[in-house]
Length: 420
Image (tube, rainbow, N blue to C red; front, side):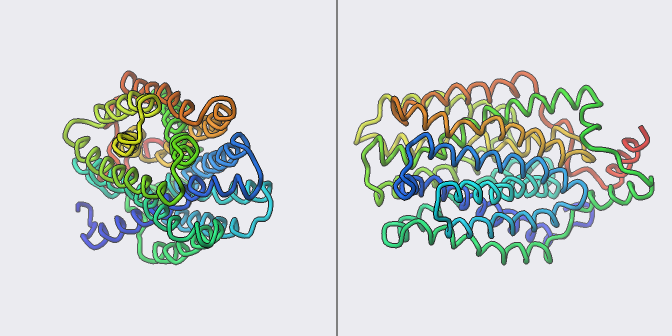
């Protein structure tokens, strides 16, 4: 590694970010896996169940927006630690809820930590990885999310049928210990520390949001990424939220077999993200983003219209591989689209404004399911995947800025920004 970053530091940062996103993924997918049980416990229909996921996405959006801004102001590692504590303790408290309304409120609060942790961890990793390896490494980091899905599915298969849904949420308190480890073992990126020092020398701080919208180029890219993130997350979280319930309700598969289907789907997603990241370093971020989005858009209606008892496992495995492909590239592509001094605010803002825009996806599919089927709702998400692929394909150039820039260049950039 350049700029005085030791091999040991690189390994510590990678392990910490990987584990952080893995438990983030576990926390997120627990809601999807326990949804059938929650519908029975609280005596709610599909639309009300979708509303739980909608409020979760709203909380994640709020967390991501403010998490990126706080990371620019107070440090990537410091804020990642506090956000991990928030979502771990909050998710544990969900296990004590007794009503539908209590569940939604506590889930919203814990989701703030989930959204912020994702934004900060991916940005932290991008600032430690050289350009030529960035999507390979960040694609592997994204696979941590799918590994979290896989671990949660295995735990659910072992715990939920015998002990109910509550113990799954109690387990979420364990990442607090990981947060303590990260706080004391992971250093802040040297570039961030240099920029903070430059700000102190200048004696004032610029408002990052004002900087984004003042420059026409940055403003345009911010808007395009906000739209892309809206359609991508509308589709991704729509699939992720309702896939377990689709397997049980529409396909008629019992819960124990459902977890087996999910294991295959999430294992394929892990491989898909790692391979896509590797390919993106060789053939381009934009190319693989488009390929992943359009391929998933084609497959979703096929799964709905042509599934049979003999081919459904193969279809869901292929879906697992494809639907996470854009995510393998997304964090690298976005982090390289904004200059260093506003990166946290810009990436967190555009991505999580998109998350707020996508928050209606789970409710929409639940509403469609009330009158048609969950499968039809999932099939319509192909439209969102098409739009998510076309916007960056047409309007966002890749590798606009390098998060791995040398520290002295970062200081020069910060001083120029502050002097404007």
